[in-house]
Image (cartoon, rainbow, N blue to C red):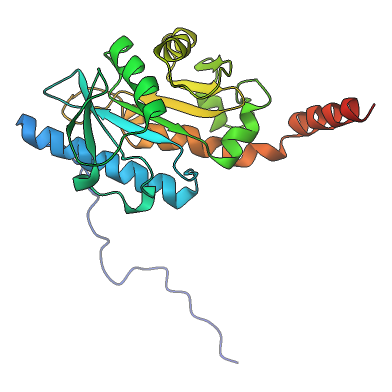
Length: 249
């Protein structure tokens, strides 16, 4: 078998280095007009809903995502009640004011979704996007009544940033929504005990200088995805075993 010849001398010069300013991570931005920013946010909202469907965060008619309108800031866009998240498009979105009236759209709105999101948008002018899901793992984790543990670099992102809120039933009254707002404080990541997850985000689309991690839909997806791996948590399993044993005694 012939010896393998190793060529140590290059036959041609290597390409020149890429300039220090390239490549850049350039994220899409809306145009300067209010109409362009509105369309950009609505597209982000529809994309968030489809991402939730893709990852299995939807649960029948439960769950809702909203984004604040850039011009009428006391109004927000929301997905219609009963429509599969994976089928929602920009034209399906509803514009709702803080009184619960539908301003644009011809589909029903989720009353619980309105109560929660309206209260948050009123109390937190810094918040642009709000997402609430009844995802399987999110609900499972919420029964433990504790924040997500900082066990990995991903879950450590939420350390010291989470809030807990006690379950008060389906949120159909404004006083229930106000209790959730009080529990939230200035947190953007909330575990609604025995209920699900609630996430807020400041959307830098059209607001230069905001951190990328707070961009919609990225911040919304990050929180809801984090609990996918947590039902196997050893401490959680121990607590569930002790609870089952107590019921049997």
